[in-house]
Amino acid sequence: MIKKGLQRQRRFTFDIDGSPYIGLFALCTESLLLLPTHVSERLAEELEQVLKVKVVRTYIAEMPLIGCLAAGNSNGLVVSQYTLEHEIEHIRSVAKAEGVECKIRRLPIEEKMTAAGNIILTNDTAALVHPGLSDEAIEVIRETLAVDVYRGEIGGLRTVGMAAVATNRGVLAHKDATRAELSYLEEIFKLPVEIGSVNFGVPLIGAALLANTKGYAAGYETTGVELGRIEDALGFEYASTGI
Image 1 (cartoon, rainbow, N blue to C red):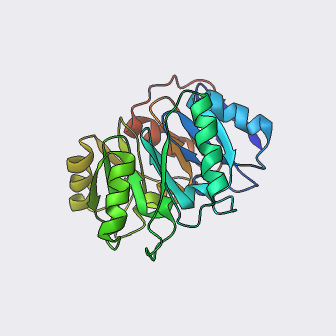
Image 2 (image 1 turned 30 degrees about the horizontal axis):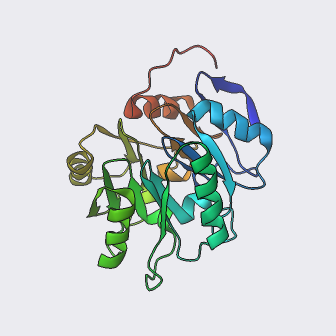
Image 3 (image 1 turned 135 degrees about the horizontal axis):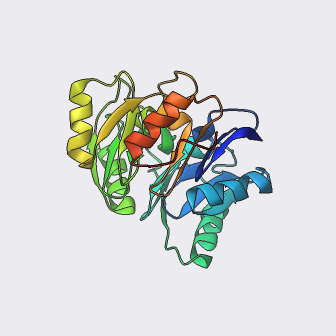
């Protein structure tokens, strides 16, 4: 459901199934946006315009929690080991029809952690992952996403995919991230890093923000001040009119 009065150029706040935690249900890269199959056509079209991407309707492991179960960038996607083969083939097929080559690999079946989106923070050049991930899982991430991979925490949280959002222009991180953690993020991503929140003070940025270098969308409870911080951190320049 689109929240009237909150839309402006290339960005708007919204919900999925009544929830402002949109990052749990969707995954955005520079070219693709994975959305649950049941999401309305209107919402899918709005997001295509905002993020300048092709929408792929799917489930991951037969669940709508795509943002929790998958992580990706322009080079590929890493998904839960329980992702079904027909789900993978569907994503590849839609991507290929749009001229996008999309390498997709599951986490190793032996890996205890399954929520790839929760434990991987990535853009097109680097990835920060849960410190407890196995070496085998890290190699899958490195090969699939074609990035350097580092272990670490943000705000004391190991679920780094929920604690921050990284694009190719900047990183917005958990408001309780330490100076050491922020410096580490700057070092590995080689981008400016800022702290912030979403949905009226929630520090789990990845749970309620979708972004690439072309646009962004946030949970409908995100305040104007928080939206301004998102724009600053991720390198957007918008006129203040429109809300």
